[in-house]
Image (cartoon, rainbow, N blue to C red; front, side, top):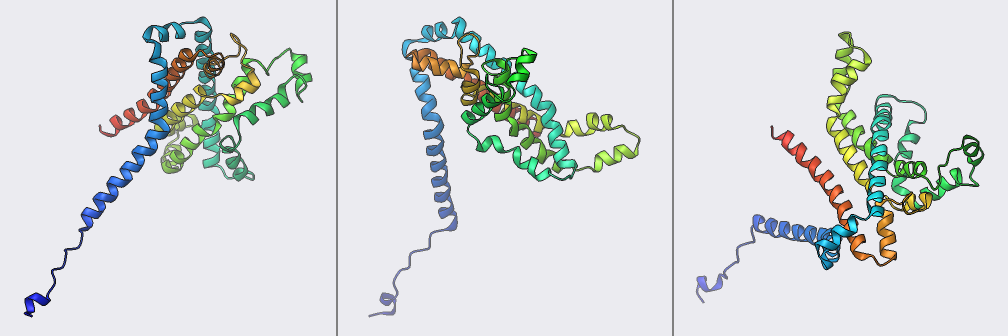
Amino acid sequence: MTEKALIKPVKPPQSASSTGAWTRRILISIVLIYVGVLILLPIGGLIAGAFEEGVGAILEALSQPDVLAAFWLTLKISLIVVIVHLVFGTIVSWVLVRDHFRGRELINGLVDMPFAISPVVVGYMLLLLFGRNGLLAPVLTALDIQVAFAVPGMVLATLFVTLPFMIRELIPTLEAFGIQQEQSAATMGASGWQIFRRITLPALRWGLIYGISLTFARALGEFGAILVVGGGVQGRTETATLYIYRALDERQYVGAYSAAIVLGLLSLVLVIGTNLLRRREANR
């Protein structure tokens, strides 16, 4: 046999770029399937159910007085919650970043408790405090204040479940900003309020915007806690999510699907709008 016959042709090794391209395609496919199954398929089911009887049925369902009242109550509670967290969440974030005190780590851990506790448990805890036989019932009776099965209790429940969003958005922003500019302004004679308004607040802008959008979106979709503490009384303590629950129970599927789509669109517009604003700001 000749020397050429003994030499076997060797296949060239697959290039690293080709392997990387296949890995990238597989990872993208996994992401698309994962997001599609968890998000796109349910959304598709909602849209199909809502439009099953046509646009007229959707408009008729959404224009019912009880539905409008439920959406108005949802928006009112969400706005109150956002305003409260905007003020006190900023204060909490500031203190946790700027001050080191005994118990700081405990408070920092307690901020994340709403992520670990079921909203239903939150509503039950509020009933134990503010219910007819709750710990604070004698005080509330003397002051003629109703918290449980009323809007104040629903606001408290929503405040609890939305507590971490504003704080967890602001803390990294404050840590990244540092204190050098604030110290420089203080040495130039600026007051504490002037420093916060002209230096710190502009630096917190995107943290505040993200915190507001996430808090508002979470408040719109709260269900378990306000169901327990509010009772879902039609026309009084029924929010949009509680209406969806009632409509499904009463087999009013078009109304339930339509209300769910409206809530989903509101949350989607908040999140996507915030991202688009930040991208536009970054491209300037």
